[in-house]
Length: 254
Image (cartoon, rainbow, N blue to C red; front, side, top):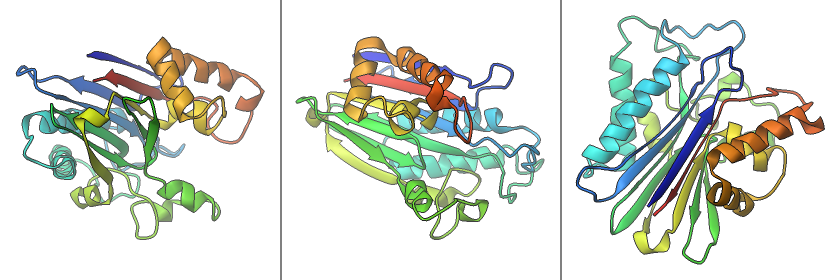
């Protein structure tokens, strides 16, 4: 098995709000990966939380990874729901969890053993699945993209019917995630990317998802992030929105 991961803040003056980790149980049977992209608050910084987004993604990511590995009888939706509840309980007495900008994150989690590969995607991070024949499938939660096609996406669409969903303080949001399961023999490799790393495909159009996974396999996650940074410094980087974003990627050959 080969596992490589990398993450880099968009601005070294600010904490990285992404989280990425992999766990391989001591039993040697299977494993899990978790990748989160913390949602950056508006310039005012008002979130109702005294801790901040990096604290939230570390708590949620750690809880989700532990549950995915140790509670294998639970579905990934139930693992995410329990991790959200555990994280909310850790700061509900000190923070306003009902605030629309309470710390939140996109989620990708994959879990495997000798028989199956399970996955969950919530919001706009990406999971890539490569078959033994080297066909690459992107597992995406495309709610935000569908909304953008209709016009500007406002805060009112966040965690609302007809809008898009992120992991915040409501455990019921886990039911909104895109999930699935594949036979272990159908999966050669997995890769997960926050949208800061997926920009190489989705924003700068340097290649498609198959090309992206090929870069990860040949050069590693840090090389993909480096390519994104190069593109951000070029003419294509001069566009509305963040010029640089936190980026995280993990590549796993099963």
